[in-house]
Image (cartoon, rainbow, N blue to C red):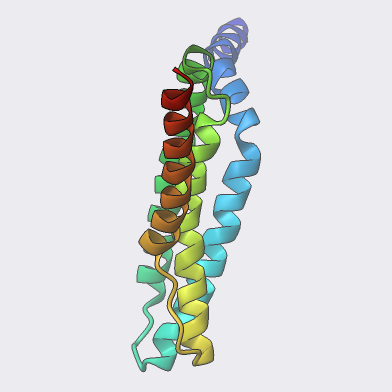
Length: 151
């Protein structure tokens, strides 16, 4: 009985940092699950509309693979937040990483939804972010030019 208590206490002490780490990231994991369910639902409906045969085993395997991928991305974002946010002075570094990853999945959800509903429209992840990056780079260029004028 005492050996069991020692093993239990040792395991809880060893796992406590992981529990603390992932407890802060729980909302992101829940969001990932919601996005996976939505993308799976709309993807299956779009594939059925195209006349494809849907195998349940493949659907579940892809969903589980996506969940594992998201847990990896969420873990990486958490590590970035812990390691680099204070050093670089960018408190939203993990948010930026997750915004990009989730935006890809949201674009996929919308494209599958549009295809299922018969709407002839496709979103492009690269077009969305290139437009945003152009705005950011232009505003940074204006800042740099203003600094050159003052000197």
